[in-house]
Length: 253
Image 1 (cartoon, rainbow, N blue to C red):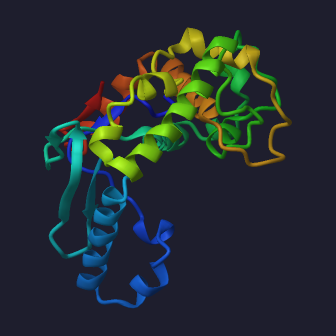
Image 2 (tube, helix red, strand yellow; image 1 turned 45 degrees about the horizontal axis):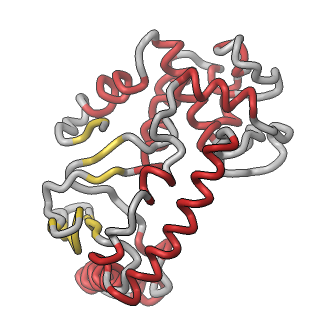
């Protein structure tokens, strides 16, 4: 529910202008020039070793979508239009849509206290549903145990080494540095039981005071949605988003 387990087969829309140092220049260009520049930036990004591979799609009103892939999806395997990509925190868009759907059906839901929906999770009464989806709940992003923290720290160091190798020796050689992805992903095996343990373990700040990005908060929102609808989060996403929008190449790993 924090976003680590959903994949899209074709593409995700990424606002290139928001993260590109060339955004002001691109904004003044004609649409075709902006498309070309966006693709050039993606190619340079992979070529510089910042990522082994990626896909870029540009969707414009009244024009055919433009899709290109760069680099490899795995060592020795080129990325293609049919490559399945993990989308990480873009999953939060799905959670947000489900929250909006719930609010539309039950007015006032978004302002309700979270503990009313998950009474045995130990969540303070001051935390409301809107705090979870605006990253103002006071909960940290993660709250794993000591061993998991050590594993993440080691994996972070290995990732820096991998990035160094990518810039010096190429992405393919760097991709053989072992164990980075499974060690770095603290969400890989998280279910509701483990998420509840995180909630009870977490050191939390006051709700509504500060904006602090919280995967845990959005995960709690996903648990509330599943509990209220007496269905799994996966089935909610499938039945309410994937199927109506005919997203037949999207799913969970």
